[in-house]
Picture 1 (cartoon, one colour):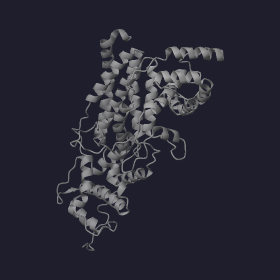
Picture 2: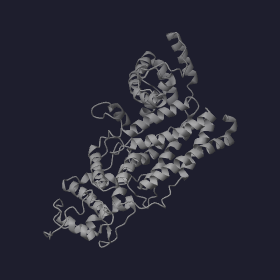
Picture 3: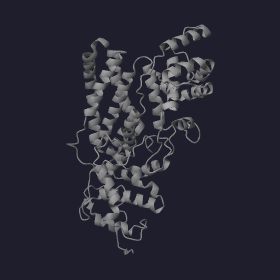
Length: 488
């Protein structure tokens, strides 16, 4: 039974209010006394050190800081952070929201974590590419709003310059991914200019870079420990990216096509002859003569040719005409991204597509239906929304699911890329490039895991320089390994 007293106290002592004084300190005992008198604490029994167990475990997992005693003096900002997390979770539990417990939502992703080695073999697999803050259009608005509220509270007592630094460097998951992709393409451009369209030469170069990226470890020494509220704020800012990168590391490998892709060269050449006769103008496999919006019409006009080539490439026994027509409309979702990434074109009416690209998109769709498997569409603290990739692919643009889940898009787009490269004899190069991408995501995950903006800033700069230097070494390695298949 409660034995609370009407003691005189400063009700804002353990609340974030913008009054920053890093010299102030207190103990867990004092915090527990404050909690027992807080009108928002609704349990009958007074809180104890054991009541804080999950909060303190979370803090240790994020910061490495371990609270060993109720009488240990801690910075007041640390205790304010503990109270904010504890009370946020307490209020959710009090409102019968135990299934979406705060710490289930914001726990560090652990599945195949490239940043840390787990001590437990039975650790829960909770990484997802659909985390609330991975995308600005995440369907998990509840978690996104919860995290935004926590960040707003923590930010009240973070130095203004440091807060701006964190918000610029860790703006959101998409910005981090775009930054990493831009760095990846600096290496791609350098190697492509020197090695050209050599499948083995480029594959060797990317394999070399993957090993070098995997070897990189950020240095954590020499930087001052940040206040706990800043550590947790930094963690929450990077959490969406870390979830994405951790799951992408395994998902990308799980959807990879390992069987050799049969040649479609003869069939595609025959199709081009048919098109030449019908249109009166020369068409080659890589001629950009079709817009995204015209794809369904072209497929409807030549269903036999498209069906035949897709069956050759995928090994499918049949491809019904109505299914092919449906897939031609689905293919537009893949191809609009392709022209944006490769031609910086956002207009679906511009003729940017070749026959080879259209067939690759159809192959990706057909392969998923025949052999592709499932995808767990879920996020922390919530049940699984489903596991049918085509269902979620088809629901895109509808009111129920206006944005395609990250994992679904990656499933279709990465297989499209595989087919497109395989058709020109560059499958090994594409696979090695995907490994290089994953290794860079993993390296940035290790950097962001420090939850210290000074370490993050320095390590990003060091890693970028490391990759540029190793790109030159990768070219030299590729020439040595397969010199006759590369160009100077």
